Image (cartoon, rainbow, N blue to C red):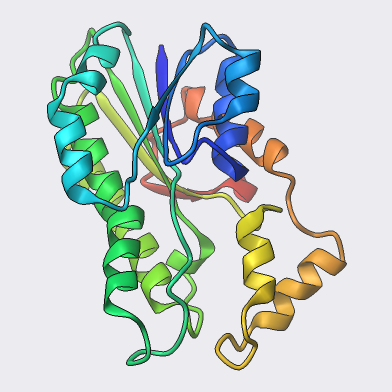
Length: 242
């Protein structure tokens, strides 16, 4: 069994990659930056590719180059964790930068769809695949000022539902909302202008009241679920309910 984790250089992605690695499962990490800590601790299990998932042409060229297919060919079962994502751009409709919208849609949605398609290609009884989208509560509950983020995360949920309906025998899929985790994204959320984000105080309170979930704890639960026999039974779920 091998895993592919996007955005493995920090936050939840780093914790998920570590959770696989400590279990002896090799990881291919895709991110703009490398994870020096994991590389030092797991030199024989971690393979890293420096890749800007915001750039569709670069990702398409990389997929055509054969690195991913060669990696998948060395494993009897593959797991893809579509973790990389971005909150920006935030703000009201009509005030957002066009380039920022395109970059967010590509990272949050385009890259997961491209990677899922590539990993699922050739799935069989001998080489089953588990696809995981890291969703968000924002996919299911809208937030003013987060229109692009909400839309792209909701699209991941719908993609998982569609794939499940296709009835693939050797492809399991689930879009998982991980809960509110203590990562750099939460730090950024607390720095947003409250005038552009009406629920700003709620997220400030979560930190002040120590109600944020440690990334390592969330990752352990997520990986345990992904590796379990229960995975793939439903298209969407919330990690806090497992």
